[in-house]
Image (cartoon, rainbow, N blue to C red; front, side, top):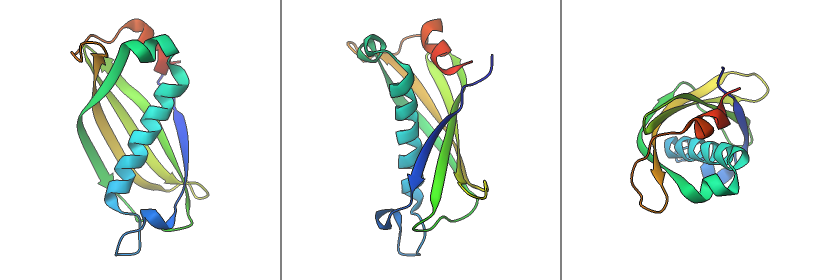
Length: 132
């Protein structure tokens, strides 16, 4: 099985720009979280979303090049691992027309039961939502 890749498109707005004239570092993190959430929303059933929630344990981001207002970017994301209660999701933020990588990132997530807010093992049903 291979990880399912999900794409989340971004038009860089003026609100994303910092004092240096390029996308603020924290905005990339927000885009990665939005892409992860959109992937979950697309793949998980209403019943699964009601029963389980994800919490972030850590983030790691590497900035390779700046992005600027008006650019069109794509956040590509996939689940790299899903074992025990933890899942690592990886990201690439690329410039849409050139395909050049702007940023790479990974997030370590923990699956919780929504009702108890306690960690719970990732089931095959959930794991298979993100693998082809």
